[in-house]
Length: 274
Ligand code: 2HA
Ligand code: ZN
Image (cartoon, rainbow, N blue to C red; front, side, top):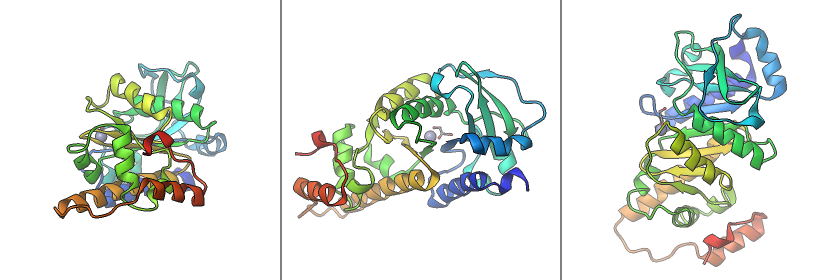
């Protein structure tokens, strides 16, 4: 059995490939990280490099994630190439005892480093782990075209986006009852976008990056990919609806949203309702 035969590694690779097939990962667009469970890290450890690569400071600190291991896509790597060549495209990194540096312990066999958004992923893992009592393990960023299109024509507020997406399809309030946060346009890859996203992710599971894409979190690959998929599909419906050019004759009412929440046993963010 090789490291690529382990279910968690297979699921990581499949998630990358699923995203590629959805058309969300042109070129090197997007990134994915998974925080390994202790028993998973123990199972994979025999396959780690004899000599780990040097420690690299991240410029951010997540003390609650000291000593954790992450699977991550590589910086500049293409999601399209993850399934055919995972050893070239992915890495496993270990976080140091201070929670402020990483080192590569497996993968990226032709060199490289984890995703350019690793500080953002890491900080958001820290925030989401704290917010969910450790349940959050996956952080996923994709270039979702319909949602990006929405960020040109809708006010960039949490409320406007949450309402528009909830009302685009009946299951939406059930899948993301907390709504979505919206981060204004920012330069990607730096500490500023990491901190702005963290601020949103303290209370949201998903953050829209204006003119860029979507950032989501969740406990496993199915739920996290499903959240990305559901939000992007809602955005697609919104864009299709607007593209008819016809006046909107009816929509899901706020009382309709409340009724869905009641019957499905979820709590909608009340301040977003009229
Ligand atoms: O990995 O998507 O946001 C490329 C990106 C940066
Ligand atoms: Zn991006």
